[in-house]
Structure formats: C-alpha cells, structure tokens
Length: 383
Length: 236
Image 1 (tube, chains in turn yellow, purple):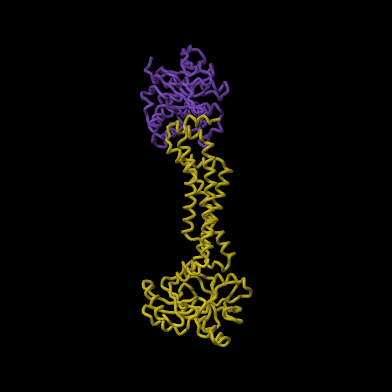
Image 2 (tube, rainbow over the protein chains, first blue to last red):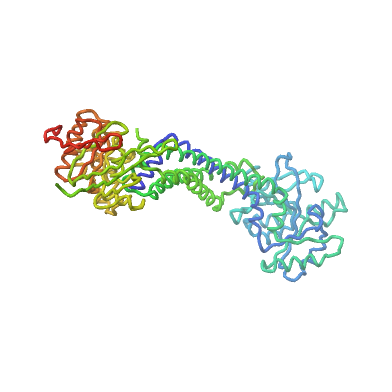
C-alpha cells in the first residue's frame, strides 16, 4: 500500500508530472547523446589493440619514415609482425565527402587487423589486384559502393588523379570496429608516386608492429633506440596512445561537451527540485496528518524520496529508451565524422545513475522540510 | 465514575507571536473519565483546540503535568509520543484529512501499517470498520467520490481501526450540513456507548455539544464551567 501511495502521489498532478517527466526524458536523452559523442571521439582509442604498436617519425606524423626501417624494426626482439600504413587524404568528388583512406601493405595489414572481416573470395581478389581496394560496410552503404565499382579520388598528399577498384566490403569483427574506411595497396601508390615525384619514393607514414602486449614498453624503447641519432628518429607508442594523440588535439571540445552534458542534468535537477518543493508545500496537511496518526519523520521523508525517485526513474527509462533510436539517426546523419557511434553500456549506466541522483537530490530539502513539519501548524493549513 | 483517562494538573501553554509570548491556556486542571463523551466549547481563541491538541499528544504544554491513558505524555520523546499516539488516539478532523489518492479502505487501513499485520488482516479489519460506519459498499471509492458526511465516516473508521483509548474530534461536523452532522454525531454517540470509547470533541455548535455527556466551557484559556448534558439533549 505504501508503494501505491507513492506511485499515485507521483502522478497526482498529471500535467505537472508529465512536464517534469518530459523534461527528464529530454535531459537524459541529451546527456546520453552527448556522452555518446564523447565516446565516439575516443572510439579509435577504445578499439585499439594492446598487441599493436605504432612507430612514426619522432618530429611529427607529417614527416614520413624510410621503408628501409621495416626490416630493422622486424629484427627487434619482441616484434612478431609488421606492416605499413599511410594516410592518403584523397577527395572523393567533393571535399565534404570525407572518409579515411589508407595505403597499406595489404597482406600484412589484414594479418595485423583481424577485426576487418572479409569473405575469402573478396580477400583473394583484393590481394590479387594492385589497384584493388576494400571499403567498410558503413562507407559502402553511405556512398553506394559495390564490389567492382571504380572509386576515383583526387590526391592531396599524393597529388594527381587516382582510381581504385572495390574488391571487397569488410565488416567489423567487433561492435566498435571502424567500418567507414577505405584501404588500398601501398605498392600501387608508391609506384605511381615514384613516377610522379621520385623524391617521395619508398616513404612510409607509420609502421604498425605486432607484439606481445606485456612487452609493449620494452619493445617500444628498443625500436626507438635503434634509430636514435639517425636522420629519421622514431617515436613508438601503443596504438591506443597513438589514437589518443589525435583526440588530445581536440580535447577542449570534448571537455566542453562533457560540461554541457552535466549542465543539462544540473538544470533538470533544479526543475525537479522545484516540482518536489511545490508538492511538499501543497501536501503539508497530509504529512501533518500522517505524523498525527503516529508515522514518524522517516516515513514521511521516505514517501517524498519514493515519489521523486519514481518520477526520475520513469523519465530516466524513457530517456534511455529514446537514446538508441535518436543515436542511430544522429550517427547516420554525421556520416564518416563519427565512424563508430554506439550507445555504450557505460553511458546507459550513467544515464540511469544521473536520473536516480536527480530524483534523490531533488527530494533532499523537500523531504527534510516535510519530515520536520509541525503537526499543529501543518493541520492548520487544511482547507 | 470510571477512572480518569485524562488528567491535567496546572497545564499552561503559550505561543510566541511577534517575539512575545501569548498565553493560550493558564493553569488548567481537570480530569476526564474513561468512557466519557465530552464536548469542549468556547469562543474563538479560548484555547479549546490547543487543549485538544495537548491531550492528543500533537502539542506539548509549557508547564504542568498531563497524564493520558496512564502515560505522562509530557515526558515522552518525539518518537515515543508518535508511537503512543498510534496506540491510544484516534483523530477526527473538521476537514476529514483523508489521503486523496487512497481508497476509503486504504485510508482506513493506513494506521494499521504501524502494527505489522498481514495484508489480509489489515484489509479485513478496514472492511469491518467501514461496515460499522455504514460504508460497506464504498470500500474502493476515493474521497473525492464521497460526500462530506461519507468522508467523515471514513475518517471515523480510520480513527477506530487501531482500537484507541480515546477519540479526539476537532469540529467534526463543522464542514457538514445539518443532516450529515446529525448522522456523524449519532455515530460518535454509538461508538461511545457501544465500544466504550472516550470521546473528546471540540465544537462551536451547541447542538453538536448536546450529543455529549458533558460540556466543558473554556474562556481566555481558563475553565469557565462544566455541565452535564441531559440524556435527551440532542441525543436523538
């Protein structure tokens, strides 16, 4: 019966409760969406493998490394496998059609990135064709790429016109695998660029090194030591640290988004606290009556906490439920800007926690006031 | 004469208003016998509601000794006093003070939540109490679906459900038409006569007071008289 009393009280003023629940739903939805944006920012880092290191030019990622480093790195103790990867930066039709493109050593690259799942036929076709490319399933869906299509890119880092034949569409082996990329043969790019700009021949963007995760620090140091005091000193770090380096460039935006997401919750907390304060003020006589009947201050406070938590839970659950479809629409609208846009269990947990925290905190002062209501004065407020 | 269920000795009470103490009751001493039906009358501000509040244990005297149902309630801590009220006092208010979101049965059941009874037992007792006040067919109605007289009957059932030692009624007919008021007063008489409950009722209405055994008059916080009511007076 106490639960019935709490629940019915929560929905006694239907319009007020509806507006409060709506506000909570929107706030929880906004919080979830903003948290997902932040998660998407870190998606690359989160999906990084602990078993991969990235070796780049110590001065800046802008500067390449000699291809000749490959065998030297492979010889370092603890290195299991190695591949190369180059940011291509081509434009597909218009600059607004941005998506990541990488020129890679195809065979070793697919070996080091097992999360890019290809059918055997497509894998063979890709490896056979030097102009071949594979595209992620999301990218294929966005631009309608099909196997056999020719994708023309206008080079920026590697100037000139380029054409690649789609030989396969890869799927993500994990939910957070980036399926919005295009990958093609570095051999083909290297050969072509050698003809166009000979001084840029045999230069590599980064080496990706497969290692035993427990030896990451040791192997990193060994690789960098190998090239110490050379013309091209290296910086080797875990793939996660490498990805976080990109995120740190835009960290201010991420911090701003985080602050806004919590501000939204703070605003709805104020709204909810006002609702509960109004509720308690209106029901002073009822709380005085309960106390006169022998119920203690704790019971009265529990009723108010229960009511506030019930409203917050309804708003929270609706907000969480709305987050999934809205995130899907939002993610699709963002295209390749956020290759992975998934509502994480952590975000859902935070949404639920924020909802309940709002419910609890909003009831604190009203519950204290109701618990302390003087019975005689409270009863006078009748009628 | 039965043993006193209420005994006041030199009870004084004042309220602070604008920084000044305004005396409401001064040195009141009297007793109320168990099983009595007493009406408290007096002009506005005479202190009758304050006196009722003190006897019911929802307010505390400034000085004096107040023994109700064998307990010196002035010495009880807040939690003990709440527990004491739940066991010994049934409240009937002028405006019924029912929980609007609960049905008649649930309202009556409310005080039993403090008694750790099984749900079925609580429901059975609430149904019986409502039947006693003539509302067996209104169990699931909410207060807003009942007339004023019916709501006051629910309040009376709620006051009775925990089998209290005394029932305090503050203007129980003040918000009712004459016919409903008479029904309520007759019901109080019946509870007093058949169940032996001590009833203390504050009223402005001499007609209502006429249903009691005795009328106690208060004026400016002092007892100005106590008279027995003739058996026929308002008794219907």
